[in-house]
Length: 216
Image: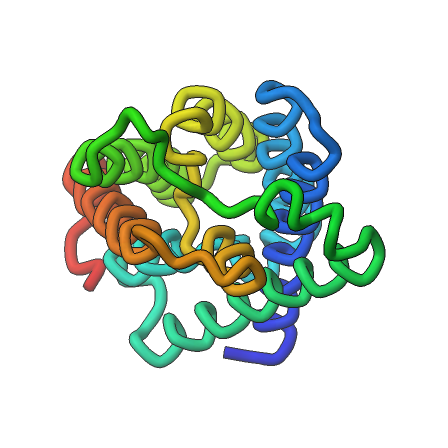
């Protein structure tokens, strides 16, 4: 994995977390927040997708591993780039907008709705990430030229569906950086395990549907 790929992943994840959490801190509507995440993914895929395949998400990197597109070593390097980008994004937001501004929204931490049981939240994150990774995997396997549009739209739709329930993370890096800055770790394991499981299941399903042999 080259420095160019690492930097592309870092920049893409930085943009996703910076824009998304800034929208939350600015008090935007649920629709505006969902669009901020989705549109950022779409434009950053256009910007750096040709370099790194634009994962911007440790769970998506797991999906690419299941598809046979990255090795274990490369997977860990993707994770390091994605986590670094997310942490730097929160650092910049704190520097530019002030800790009090971000603390008012708990740094954009993804949390379960009080009405949900933990297993319910887990299931929702699995399903949402399944949808996201399934679209990503299908676009990759089909070599879809408009992949950014479809993937960004999927992020937006999933955010609208699950934002009020689990925060619609689908992305461990997006959840990790806010949890780190807010020092809020309740149910944080869920935002790693559920997205990674959903992404792996989606990758396996896409491989089967498109009859990809010998990918691993």
